[in-house]
Image (tube, rainbow, N blue to C red; front, side):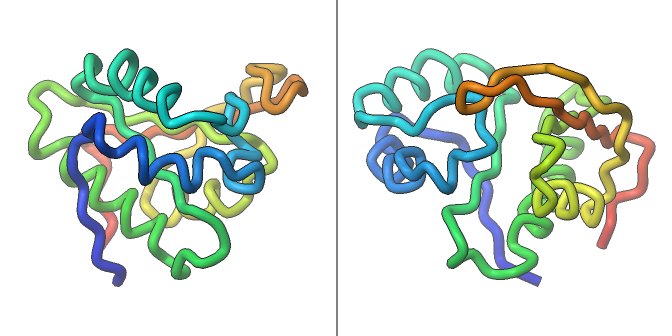
Length: 143
């Protein structure tokens, strides 16, 4: 299994984030355009991520990521969410219907598909269907 470390975002992460957040291939399934500036990313981290105590995301930068690392990250995130965040009863994941790799990783980590949300959001200028997955506190964690 891959070694995965989870930690809270910091404003200083904007520089490292720029490496993947500006890559159209990596952001192809995201609901925002590739970032054009580190300042924009700092504003996103400071204004959206840091104020929300349970905001988490997993993004793998391109084909260099080892197989299984997304699943390992998801498993670690689930264990952490239920152990360290008081009152968490449910973890949700929203993924583009055509993002087969992310859907596969969610399912391997124990998430359950709940529904396809038709015409749910705009991704790269196109209206897209999204799949919602869930994992609730009574679901067994996958080893």
